[in-house]
Image (cartoon, rainbow, N blue to C red; front, side, top):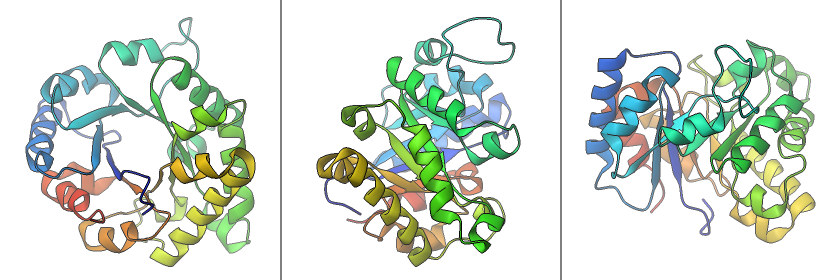
Length: 255
């Protein structure tokens, strides 16, 4: 991991837990990572539990993120949630373009870019997710796919805003499948993304941007993944639903 970049471990709870379970999990995570230091930790619960989770974690070491947002500030968008709504709940991070939003709900890279810009305008830290399907990888399209997602996701941002954006590389074929990109495979794509940032925004920006890896990250593979020079954290799925497992991943960050 780059020396300029602080490791970020974030747990995406997806559509799991109930209110009591979310509160209990947040409490357990807060206690289990309280003494780690030198690592940023966030949990990303379902939207309906954000208020309860932020109340539990207020003033502690764990930040809270949201799984989604709508780029409009307000309007007739039934079921959606805006940046100002999220900020009023104490949210810091927000996922933009998670693979499930792209592939299950049909969100385009251009629409994801609108979300990233809205997050910045409203004072949240966007986590821009990019990644290829198995078909893309087998066809040799990995770089083309993630480049398009990165470019449109960051469109119209200046270098300072890009520096304040977190990128999450999540190969779709390794999410919830038990398959994980090898550390070398993950590093290769992370290095490609950083090189693209270098070309577009300059050396200082490219060196500062945190690029997480997401895709079946577990305690037994976290250390090797996080040891790669361009991997600056993890976007954790299933393992984040167990506080002990999640804390082990957070503790695996390089010294």
